[in-house]
Amino acid sequence: MADFEYLSPEGLRSDGRRPQELRVLSCNISHCLQADGSAYLQQGNTRVIATVYGPHDVSRRSEAQHDKAFINCQFSMATFSTSERKKRPTGDKSCLETSLALKKTFEAAILTDTYPHSKIDIFVQILQSDGSDKAVSINAITMALIDAGIPMKDYVCATSVTLINDTPIVDLNYFEERGPGPELIVGTLPKSGKIVFLQVNSRLHIDNMEKVLKEGMNGNQRVHTILDTLIKKHLEKSILT
Amino acid sequence: MVLSQTKMDLDFRLLFPEEFIKQILDEGYREDGRSHNQTRSTTLTVGSFKSADGSAVVRIGGTCVACGVKGELANPRAISPKDGFIVLNVEYSLVTGSEKLGAIGGGEKFFSSQSLTQIIQDIIHSSKFINLEHLCIEEGKICWSLNVDVVVLSCDGPVIDACVLAAVSALKNATLPSVEIESEKPLVSMATRNHLKTGQYPLMTSFAIHKKEVSDTNIGVLVDPTDDEAQYCTGIVCIAVTNDQKLTGLYKYGGPAMTSDDIQKCIRKAKKQATILVKLIDNTMK
View 1 (tube, each protein chain N blue to C red):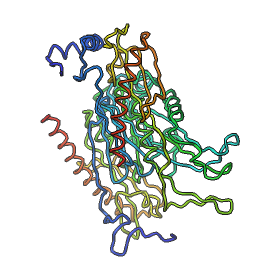
View 2: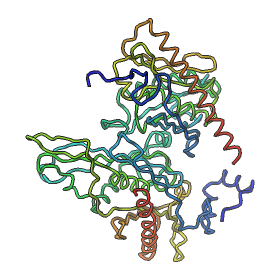
View 3: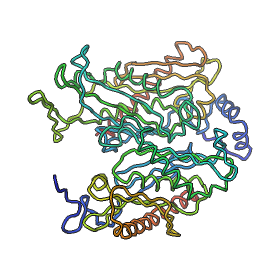
View 4: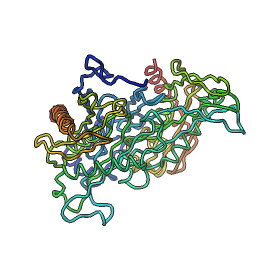
């Protein structure tokens, strides 16, 4: 399989999607009653569970900030989530990097100055990984934060994009993520269209950047519409019962 | 009977949770309307994680546990060249907020992840659920090592019951590719996958002891305690029964001294619960 076909001559991807098509996104909000906010989000075969605790008292005095809340974010992956068994669920370098990236993303989106001297804990766990782990985690955390009722500027929506044969491809699965193209992950605040998270792995020609980024932002708009309907449905249901 | 929740009840519950739960338990009621020997409904899903060779998700009330089995090829130990390995590992996911709530996992009062691992590994081996010799591919050379990873996703009551059910179901759900030895090298063919040969399997039921003294009316023992109830209980009794109604493990930690009659009552209940769980597994695995 020297030349795996990422895009068929008809313009379809390996899983039958069109280049700009997202995977099926479903979400179960408030599934965990112990947490202040929780969401289980499934995007294709990538399954993520996110919980939010807080805002509550800081656990160490060094975490207290007089003008804003301290955000603690921890990312982990179940040992059976990947095709090769992971040795440990947390603590390896890629997990630490992702934790930090998520923390910085949500520091930009949460109105942290509403809760000085307090702490917000965000925990994410990947239960099954099939590409776009970071992007799906961001979407799941957004849902959990909304469930917890923590004020934010807007939803944070994220998608991953790659470029194959000059065609931008949105919401990558595992094979596409490991493919030859570059990977760009973009997280935006969809209402204002502002970028809060951007990551490009491997080489991407600067001329192509604009095109790929635009497609990612379009993807985020679609993610936003889906998340927004899910939240509204959930609220309707919880008000009625 | 569900307790009527007036404003005063709710205020009392909020201000004195311990006193509230103690009082209604003493009167023979429980907060969610169950009787003392009534369990919550259990749901089981198998094979939902395709990245694992076998998987299961168990929910008992608000408790949620996921388990994945992954097989690896390994070299057998020189002392037991015919045996494969089952490596069980239980972990409280960060999602439970275990970090926030202290060293012991999210709310669970009685068991740390290490003790859960040890107890479940023991009862899986002692019930002769999987004969380790069936995991052998070639004696002294190569065998399967099954990594059974149990992740606790939320704690609301008997985590240990859910963990045992998840581990057993995931192992029953697991399929391994067939391996042949060709010129000293293992050849794995992914096309043919076989289920493991399994024998009797264990099922666990937990009881919490909430009275300082267990009276002969057995009112002091609660089956399937919720997290809130467990917080105000002093001891726990966990009983593992196999699917053919044999006792394979009994653990009593803390609480007042119990007579053997009380223990017998618990065992009888555990046996009844085991038949319900066997039905659940059979229906799900069909």
